[in-house]
Length: 444
Ligand SMILES: [Mg+2]
Image (cartoon, rainbow, N blue to C red; front, side, top):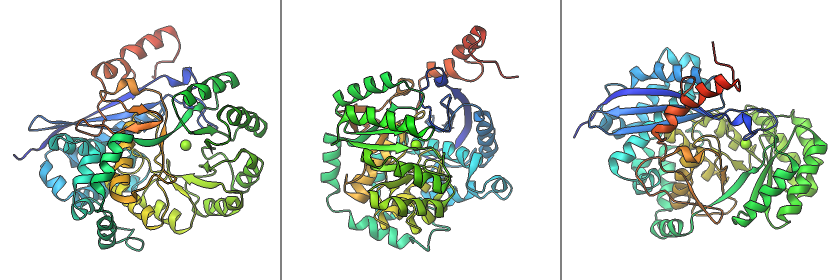
């Protein structure tokens, strides 16, 4: 039955995480984890839910951008969208006037992500499958038909992508069964937020070890002596056999990044994440080259704005760990193209997660990657942060340090109705209370 998109609803939802220091790093010292949350209504009654992650102020700007995209979506037949998803994706990223405020970057691209994520959720719900399964069950030709290859054919063509996927067709059933049984490896970031005390870090390391995590990440970059102290504490708690990564969240200049990291080489670090500006491809390449002798790779991507930037990062050998973000790139269509380019360069993809809902989303993508593309867990793991999952109807399940596959239809993006009532900004019940208590100032 033909169905049309009849309504695009968007909400500004914010959580007061700055009160506890959750999510704090060298550059974002007091984030209030938030999202622009999109609800699509189709004429057959199915709803699709999508979001893009923000950290407080400015969420209202993303909400306005979603409203600007809405006329390009309302009235469209969903079967037409999914039948030629690459064309639809190009249409909404290439509107002749709206593209001027991008193109394919910044606020308008975050809005694209929220809308496209909602469309994929709608599609998966209509098919009665979780997203990872929807992707895994597609033929290579169908899957590739969702990707807009403009600007990346010098690295990967549609034909090459199909070829790459065909090579991995064998063994998909076995890998799917293995993944459903064992889960996908996760690493834990929430032990090392920069705003946490040494005591809290110790406590959290002990707790996470008990939960069977074997890989950990800490925030660095505010103060070298503090970094050394904090990393000593973590190494002492987790021992030498477990993996440890660090994340500077874009704090340094290129030379500064190299010098600072040379001071941390005896902590046996797997990667330095976001050492410098996310746009500095050659800078990342220089850092990669300088740190290679120490066995430290460069990881980046959570603020890499589109597939073109990722293409150049790969071409320039500027990253050794590719960190796609489910809400920064323009939804699954664009993310698939980055996975395929990374596969061509044999660079492992370790998705960025945390925030609001990012863990819920990326688990689907990592599962598809394992089953249909990489066929390997080698150097691959998904970030795990434990905040805010309780607000989702189908939150992630972590068992023994691994993501257990979601089995319910959709992209795991639907928030609880009560959460929206309480945390919608600025009129939700919780925000009204916090304004009255003087914890936050009501916006003008
Ligand atoms: Mg990071």
